Length: 318
Image (tube, rainbow, N blue to C red; front, top):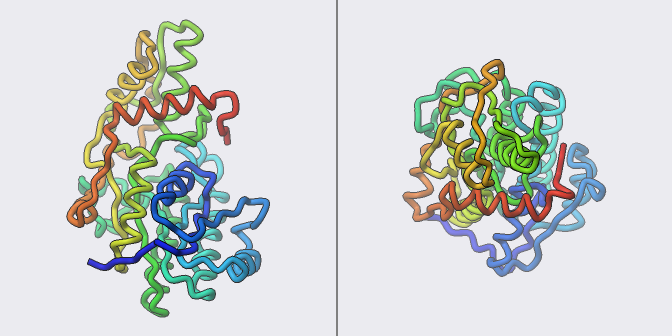
């Protein structure tokens, strides 16, 4: 097993304000890094190659966690396909190329489980990539993320760069986006249930049939898995970072209602799309190296709702 020591390194976390990026920053506090580098969109436009090159030449990171991305749920992907494609390809292209030019020792590119075919065999193995058609509702984002994976592979193959990629499952936790239309399913459901409870509603609605199955991972578990991968993996093939179990959306909604304390009925808007029928990652590669997540879904939801209650007056809505 390969080993990369983060102690004493200058580590750049691109996308440090996002849910995963902020979790990576929290996790890196225990790695004895020389410095954790961050930059806001006001400091640097990651869609501008010259700006990225200049910032990297000036700050000289040893290692990079590339977690910066434009993200959103089904509605956001359908509504802003050009932005999801252009922004995410530009961000990946600019940072990966600048990392090569500036001789960064190691880079980890953060992908997404949506890179896999809509009807990929379950649990999804890493070699399922490009084996079938994508889920149409998020193909723009998926194509951008696949481009990032292939860039890491290409720069590794042509220039010998130690660039790797990791594909997390569906994530939730502190710092999530709680927009009712544009967010992912867990923050949307937590907020719906909270509003229903606060307003005394007798029911709460979910989108679709509720029968599709999804796997969910707490952002802090994901960050721990990414740091583990950075320290222990050096390979061309990307690696899955998963929880290892899944639930139906109806089961999830009921667990959210229990977490929030909403005792009304659950209803379904079947005119809304379900998306992929089932999506669970084969996480055997990382687990074989000795890594495992800490949060079960029930505990993780309690932590996410606690964060929501503490930050509901200024939660991110995009």
